[in-house]
Image (tube, rainbow, N blue to C red; front, side, top):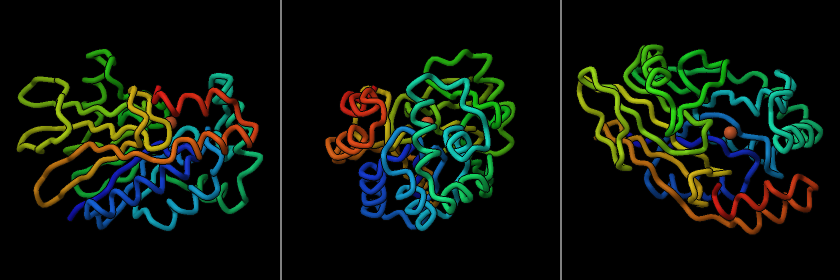
Length: 244
Ligand SMILES: [Fe+2]
């Protein structure tokens, strides 16, 4: 079975629709969402409703928690905080209630779904390309199953723990080997920050035992226009174009 996995939609409906369409074309029969459905973009309710209707499993992101009023947003940067305030004003009661109920982690067999690092999921530690070796080891130590799909950093990344080695897998098509353990960051659908503006997602083929990191183009201009018209910080529109 093929499973489509995505994260960090951040209220970007154009990106969400593109990712869901691409995953369907790729033959995905199930959808997993790794959180940060809202915050930054202009369509938080539409994204929440679409994710709720399509995803088999959804975990909580830090922006979901802040926008739904479950956590303070003091530690967010000014633009993110403005977006949290805008989003919490615009969320419907139904969206807010649904977001507040999302679990921090879900385990499916030998796969963990979590927004940030498996090490203290509520602490929102990043799995990112420049993380310290010690933090990586700690994240793997907290991983009690074979692999975790994560998001949060908005940068796709695959980390491997195998035969006492910890390393970064540099390709975008991974074979899950016997004895290997994996932290797979699927990147961001709605606000990529790796220099590629295309929406990111992953495809997990349970039968083949493979994970593919993929990208799909979407209507960036439409998402930008909505952000500007909504009165959200313009930098949030600008950055979608560069993917940074
Ligand atoms: Fe995020």
